[in-house]
Image 1 (cartoon, rainbow, N blue to C red):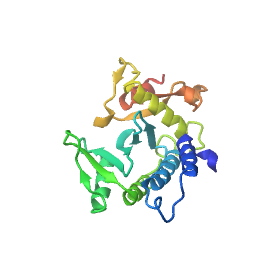
Image 2: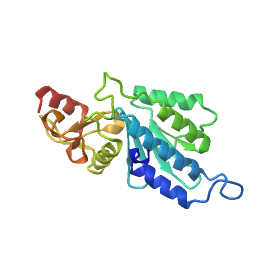
Image 3: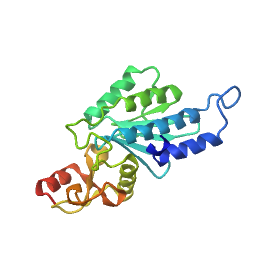
Image 4: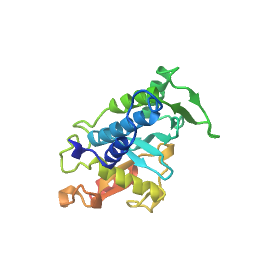
Length: 229
């Protein structure tokens, strides 16, 4: 069973083994224990739900995407986890997240610390992380009408492969290589969607490995399919 999880799960498991266990005393209420469990649950959700992909970024933050659009970000601190998302543009998925947070008050205490009025942040402890974990686990999964419903399908990119491609995409400055157009930057924070594409199509012998994946903006991926490149 452990083989189905990616590197984040294994790293979290390694850290958990080194930390003092829960119990009475100074270590009983450390939020780090709950955060480790959340990371493992997020990693498992990425593997089982092809719509969920996360990226670890410089500085220790985590960006979580759903259906190719950025949903929220997490930044760990000593005593809490900072959750951030955007009000504008208000995508359907962000609205569901904001409604979930609103319905969980007064557990979530909203704090706007950014000069950008459309960016909201909350301090998350153990209770808030439990709500967020349930929210991620309840996100709809791929169906037969979507790209690939079965994770055993040869066209399915594993969670670890998608994660590595997304992290490379962020490090490159969030540029789409372009299909029929020049290389261009994708404003993913503003709601522009991305998709994971097989460089060499599976129909022509391409694999679903890390060497055959690229991140395209949704428009370029549509053009690629229309032209059957």
